[in-house]
Image (tube, rainbow, N blue to C red):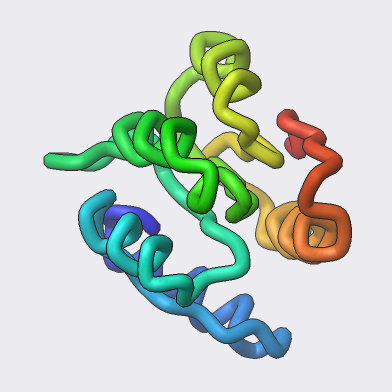
Length: 124
């Protein structure tokens, strides 16, 4: 989920060509709805979005044991040092800084789907 349609499109095309099925969410409200509907195995999310932000999603996810089971990769332009400790407490699998390397993202997604309970936090 990202508020930038170009980034969402890039991820859908790049990961889709590698066999992944993706749902797009423009904001935290859409992402939470898809998560609650049970439609996702993994969430890739930006932190800074208007309205319901990625941090808001993480807070709601942390309070809901069902949502907490969904692995999450955070891709953000926010200074990683400023958010790392907070994200550790919210069971984030990995934190990838923007601009990101698509191959690092792909490897992180694959690793997360294979071992979702073994967070690496700082993937790049």
